[in-house]
Length: 483
Ligand code: TYD
Ligand code: MG
Image (tube, rainbow, N blue to C red; front, side, top):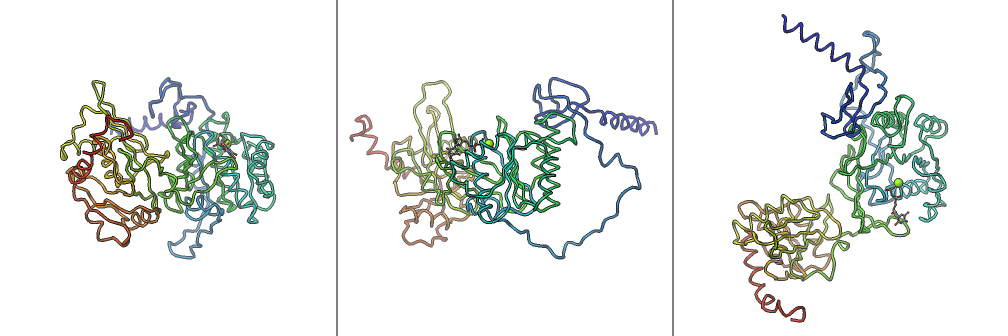
């Protein structure tokens, strides 16, 4: 009995402290009732700041005051989520076929990557199709947005602009007339609502503003796109709760030095999450890239030692990318392993398999691996191409310029089959490749007679093949390029 009693006391103390919580971590949204240097929830330092307590909601209501509501069955008129096609095919592919009415979409990305450009283009495309589209900027003045639109040649589109940051004002204005089909809020971090008493940009404000806009979208059926800032480590700034609240989270990525931008769905309640949209940033805005394979291959590198072409799949779309490796004797005690665009732990695994099962000694070599064009490879099917590029560089043996590779390498040194072999081969044939080096089992899926398919059962076989070609070039290596 005593134990139960003390538990009750603790619970009561907990409830009291909860009501007076005022310090909120700006990184993870955890709340504390006193200031401290380090957030115990996420381990970040100096992220706690004082915020006004949120108005007590649900639990504060007196018992017996609830409103009765009807419960629905799972079957019934499931009105098919009506979609609003933007007309930008690469964007629609990522959203799963257009914006769903009444949904809220969060677009995150590094500063300057092109979020505002993409969204003003999307708003203009919808306006041109006769829908009411509103673009609200909390960061730029109307004149600045107009200037950008002018440069993009979108001035004829009937997009309605405003530079506003008060969520209540925005909702009141938009509720007054005909409800817009698309509302862009650039960015959610600049919005504030009088429902919570803390400064704009704080976690509580971001959460409160997002909630208010979400309610507006669900009530009116307007589709809302929120722009979200990204912190140094790639998270969307503000509480993760916003990511949980919205219907879809898209991330807009790209390397600063490259012109390519990739729109990727991180979460999507109404569509797939593995599709990507590829854009190119030009001086007239973002252009769609309908055939990205051509973008990620460079003619001059093909046929050089250390370059292999990987026939990959992004979502439902095949994509050829070039993998470049450089293996060179190290001058350091511990050899370097550096990788861009691929998982470093997969590189370690492939190197270990090469050492253990194929007799390739890499302990005295630096290893660099790069996926060309700023692309990132996520699927294990890239193992075989990476291994081929590594061995090709080590043996100074160029791989055939007209060959593609795919296959997963297992720890035993076997090459395992991967999904969608036929689609990969078809794309390779379309782009003029004549040979494919694939896992054993993929051969049966072969449908293209104009592609010579070589199957490999184990990595050791492939290594022997490449090493055999390496002999001649190695003899003339000291002579420079003119051999
Ligand atoms: P912006 O959409 O403002 O980025 P974000 O909203 O994500 O911060 O894009 C800014 C960058 O895009 C800027 O560096 C210039 C470049 N840009 C072009 O190259 N061409 C264009 O037509 C436009 C409008 C921008
Ligand atoms: Mg912007």
